[in-house]
Structure formats: structure tokens, C-alpha cells
Image (tube, rainbow, N blue to C red):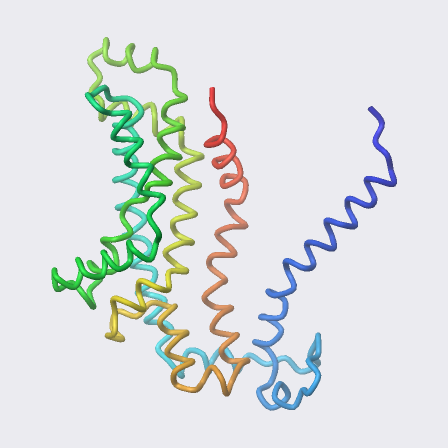
Length: 277
């Protein structure tokens, strides 16, 4: 079937236009971060370029608040939380997909019903629990509420369920344990989905804002989200927008690089999770 060149051209024009709309906020963020403070304040009408870019704003972002320490705290929080969550959801998904026990389907249905609970209610419950356990202002208190996810368990369970039962029965005949079968067969087959879940969880942890703000008031445990808020509360964010945009660029850059490196795995993992049979 021959493609209509006019429709093809219109499609590409639309896609380019939409891409410019999506990318413009990032361009504006980077542009503002390299503008001189005085020049930025002198702009009565915002300019879409600068003839005198400066890196001083990036130095100010690290000296006004301990942004480096907040980045390290965020890295620790992200790595530990993601690792623990992968263990939890993998074991849970395997149990729901492969093991046979009374009430499995009912338990899974009730488990999925947890997705209907508003996030605000969960936050309140988690805050009360962590406070009663005296885990505020600790990495344990930051990490514990995020080590599981109903959606990720569902996504991984659907992938595990697509693996033929014959492989499992053959492995059991050979005397393979459930854990060894999970490690040697199911995890390698579902690697794209696991990579997707890992990347999405990293992004979620890195951008976490409400829970860190709620559970920590000690600067030793601040994440980057706390750091940005601290900048604003100190007046720095309102008075020196270019330096604040520099901090945002520094915080966003790892996630942008991560997404660009693994974008194919993300797309293939999500597509695999939505395919049955």
C-alpha cells in the first residue's frame, strides 16, 4: 500500500511541533540556569537566548545548600529502596503466578483492590506507623514504605504467567527447587520487564517529594527534593531563579541520561507487560 506523501508530511510536522512543545520547558530550564543573575532580573520581557552564558549559577547551587550531600542521600535512598523492592515484588509475583495454594486468586484480587485506596490515606497510615516505631529522621523510615508496589507486582505477575507451565513441570521433574527455577528461568525470560520496573522505580525514588518532606526534618537525611524546598524557604529560590534552575538541572540530569540509555528496554518491557498469551 502506497503512503500518501501529504499525510506523511503533515504527520511529521505535527510530531516535530509536539516535540518542541514537550522539550521547551527543558530548554527554558537550561537557558535560565546559564543566565547572569543581573541580566535575568533586567529582562522585562523574557529572552529565548543569551549571549553571555555563565556557570556561576551552578557553583551557587552547591554553596548555598549542601546539594552534594543531598544527592548522596538520594542515591542511597534510591539504590536501597529499589533493590529491596525488586526482591519483594519478584517473590510476590512468583507466588501469585506459579504457586498453587488455597485462595490464591481471591487473595490476588483483594491485593489489586489496594490500588483503589487513595494515596493520601496510605501516606497518613505510613506516617503514623513510622512515627510510632520512632523511625522518623532515619533512612529506615524513608525506605520502608516504598519497598513494595501493587502495580509492579501485577505487572511482573502477568509476565510470569505468560511462561509456559511445561517449563515449570519439567524443572520440577528434574528436582529443581522453586527458588532455583525462579532464578534460572523466570527472571532471565522476564528481564526486560524487570529492567523497566527498576528504571521506573529509580525515577520514582529520585523524584520523591511528599514522603521525604513529611518524615524528615533533620538536614542529615534530606533528599534533593528537600534541598530544593530548603532553597526556596531560605529566600534563595525567589531571589536567584537562575541558580535554582541550575540546581534543578543537576538533579534532573541523571534521570534524563538514565532514560536515554534504557528507553528501548522501558518501551519493550511495558509492551510485554500488556501482552497476554
